[in-house]
Amino acid sequence: MANVSVIGAGSWGIALAAVLESNEHQVTIWSAIEDEIQMLKVRREHVTKLPGVKLSENIRLTTDLSEAVKGMELIVLAVPSVFTRGTAAKMRSYVEEQQLIVNVAKGIEEKTLMTLTDIIEQEIPQARVAVLSGPSHAEEVGRGLPTTCVAGARTKEAAEFVQNVFMNDVFRVYTSPDMLGIELGGALKNVIALAAGMADGLGYGDNTKAALITRGITEIGRLALVMGAKYETLSGLTGIGDLIVTCASVHSRNRKAGMLIGQGRTTEEAMEEVQMVVEGVYSAKAAMGLSEKFQVPMPIIEQVNQVLFHDKFVKEAVQELMLRDKKAEHEKMWEATE
Image (tube, rainbow, N blue to C red; front, top):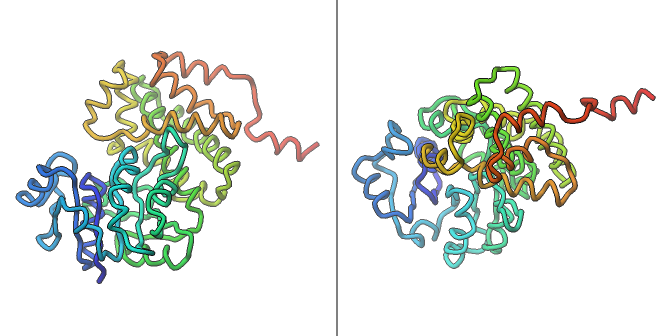
């Protein structure tokens, strides 16, 4: 049994806390919002973000960050990506040398183009940092449906510790040293999922979605490989696996926001209607920044940015994608035959 804290009481934090408690760990959940903690104490469930998932009475609930950090064998950082840096900065003075923090959010910081684990390492240099990601909607994890994820860390020891803490008969965890690939796959798939949702909102079919998923992973893979990630990661759970589930699932807030935009809502109206953080909207500009920085063409992500931030009509964006210059699917395959 380990002492584990979950920093952030959103749907994903609550679902993972339930997994950890079922594994007989001593779990503490922290939120900066007093009303949220009071609701969890009284109702033992998050009635707006994850209704129906009951928390054990054994789980501690607090708004005291020092209580949630000091002495913990594992700290699960589960705040939305836009709050990662600020929360990490507040945690810094409480984190001990070599204390292990696992990031479970998905995103790229817009201004710096840094991954979330890079941000945590910058803000809390004394910590060991890992990442847990994969095709894993909170709604299903909270209900105990079979799910697989990947734990990434700079050392095998740290990755295996995270694996051992989380893994059970319905929550399977693999390990990987490719933290960069895991984080890029997790963040950029949200932008592609917005495009998939927009296509759904326009009433397009399965052919369109299949095209977006396959060409989307091509875009993500091109960038990730140039940045130093591994092909195997992008072809695995945190690449194509996470992309498929986020583009297709009824639980996907990114797909839902995209669908509302495809139906005519503005970006702001769609985000307000979803009522949860739509990570893809925050990652879209960062994805475009990485595309420009590393000179990697990402036409789907470029068109998503045009729709989100430059008032482009979704149908016009789709038409531009369809009418791009003729290309081979894999140019190097032709080169190999010459």
